[in-house]
Length: 218
Image 1 (cartoon, rainbow, N blue to C red):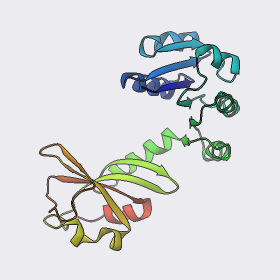
Image 2: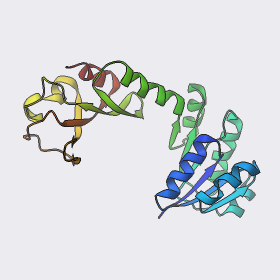
Image 3: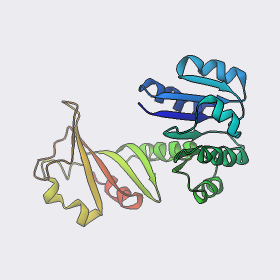
Image 4: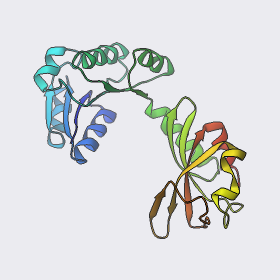
């Protein structure tokens, strides 16, 4: 079990806090809005009303030495900067920050946060991939132009092996797992000599530009 601190209990912060708590972790949730704290209270280990930018508030809530922090302060960029600094001062090394723009992300990355998260953009990219008529089923952006995508096996690949397809050489992408939809079996580091089936989907990783080319195959 890990200990997480979530500062800011809007839709994003609350959802993250609930998800972490549901997985059995200790979650400390902090927000200046009493109603937001009351709503989240049954779904976290500890909920506190207060300013997450203040060391004293974080100390009283038990944040010192937590495994990771999540900062979700809405449109208040200054608040996200100060909250991240306060978490760092408490010895929290992993800090994830919800950002509202590319400039906001650049600022946070300059500060050395673990990851800046732009939910609206990432959701839009995932939706765009699904709506574009390609074979993409799921999409997770890794940053710096890389992502992991789940795609159906194109007809041209069905009945062939990963080794014979030479995906790394031809498309500069890597298959990190194969998911058999019929048996719901997920095989990580798949056998390169196993034959791909129509019922398989592939989890592939690489640059988004290279993945886009592969996803257009039928």
